[in-house]
Image (cartoon, rainbow, N blue to C red; front, side, top):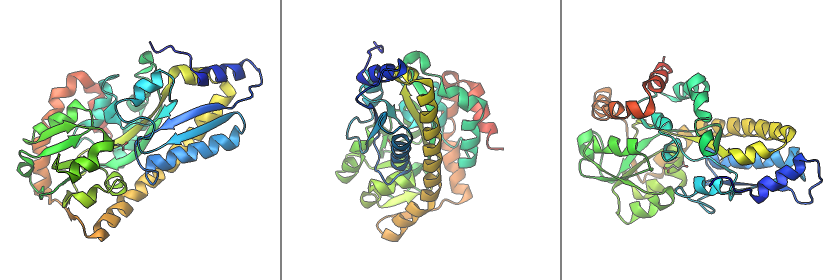
Length: 327
Ligand code: SIN
């Protein structure tokens, strides 16, 4: 089912055979966020590097804002050869592996240094290849940042979320996390969140400062709790069939360009944690609530039992390695 030879693969094979191809190989990079985000900027940097280093041989078309494929479809499209690169949030691989659910466990990482340590360590690196048998290859992790909670009523204590509807990504861990505080989780694509908030189809959502700012969620939410309770990072992913069809020398250039683009995106992610938060603060539209240590401890107590429910699916070894990265 995954073995359709696409135009991109065929073109790459032509290059591999040393036959001069008239047309450059087209690499479509599809994502769901705005261009002024870590992922948006990373995709553009990748395009710039590839098109300068492999000029005439490859072109990279970047489709932001779910223009080409939204959350539900992009990985299927990749396996059919309709898109070559994407960087879905780590919460969106549930259909292909349960192991990446480790990144959704609430209050797992104390900060982004711990996230980086886990991702670059042996367990994190192992996960990059965990979907190869399904035709998907991880090229690297990209940061966005820690998640904040937003709603139209103040969320100071976990009980404040009781009975409220929250949009979540398509993740069972995230569903369990909201159920643990008596809230109602609704799995919805990223492209629908603003409208759902605006029309009161949902009461709240969880996301990073960068996504809350760039998609204007703060304009339709009165309160944001600086909870840092979870993570939105990305797996930059490609079709194994496409990637393996690229000639070795070109693949080395693509890999180097990706490494550079990810470093660029990570630098922007680190900067946006404070700059996009400040832009939201300065707007005066929504209030930002800082939790006291005692208040935060209540959220941890309420949400952390979720870990035990998913330990078997994820693997205790992965959870232990993630926890150890906090030290
Ligand atoms: C993204 O950052 O790619 C989207 C995250 C979300 O669906 O909330």
